[in-house]
Length: 190
Image 1 (spheres, rainbow, N blue to C red):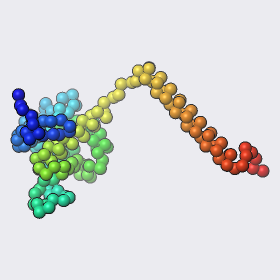
Image 2 (cartoon, rainbow, N blue to C red; image 1 turned 135 degrees about the horizontal axis):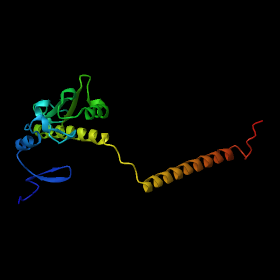
Image 3 (cartoon, rainbow, N blue to C red; image 1 turned 90 degrees about the vertical axis):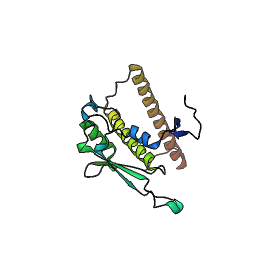
């Protein structure tokens, strides 16, 4: 058993994870092993991003930093060329292009950056996590939704009907207020 203390733990996303050396953490998350044949199984992403298919570059972060600013290259930019990515299926690539249109340039590179922490390795891990999230969100958007049950359909129809009734009642109330401001109930314009 590992004794978890604040000094020996890394708090990430609300969960306490045992602190492990950053290089081994990055090696685990940035796996290079495995061939491309087992990466796309039934067009489902398995979470492994082959590092030979991404370009990683480092640059100086923006913001305050005191005397140490502009000396460390802690900001990380990860680029994935969608057209040549073999571990993502074509429908998922098309979905990523539409969902992340602001991150995909004209040359079909998906660009993900992170400067969340002061550590380059953690920022690289964050970029790869974002990339995984984008791929999984695109897969989820492509999955067909099951049709709602009859009970759910009836409840939705009832909610729509009530919302329409409330909206029309509000409109008639506002209309009556305006009529009363004109000085009477007469709408005769002649």
